[in-house]
Image (cartoon, rainbow, N blue to C red; front, side, top):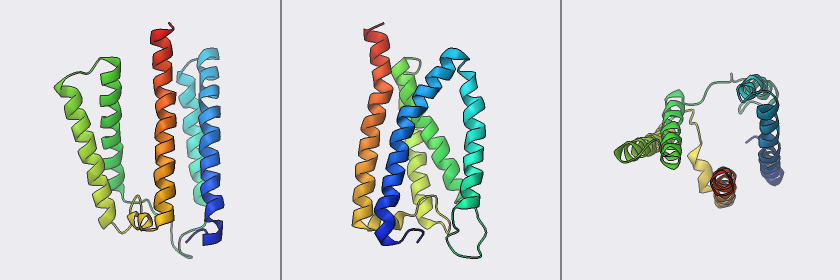
Length: 171
């Protein structure tokens, strides 16, 4: 509804370009800040920047329907997703770094996956879903989303695993 069909390719391109640029600029600036100042300073920059960008988005992006107030999407679904993804990430990092092992990793990973699935199921029944699942019925959108997700996962895998390899293998 926000973008006419003939402009959707440009919209998806803008999102992909922004993601690609941020993957290059973010770690570079973060590394520079971490080296020159301290890793704590990364939060002192990212938190105000995130708040400013969220405020700008709420002020500048058009509303879905004229005359409606901006509302948060399904808050319980957001909380389920937040906690679920947190558990998944903690379990995977804990396993890789070796401070979590055995049943603790499996339990955290399983609980995280259950919470993520619960969030998606709740979004399917919500009036203001976190993600509008009907978008995936559009074959083009679903295909582009799947390709974007796969390429992001591959890129993130390289970005996360390469430093581990370099620090362990190369010292």
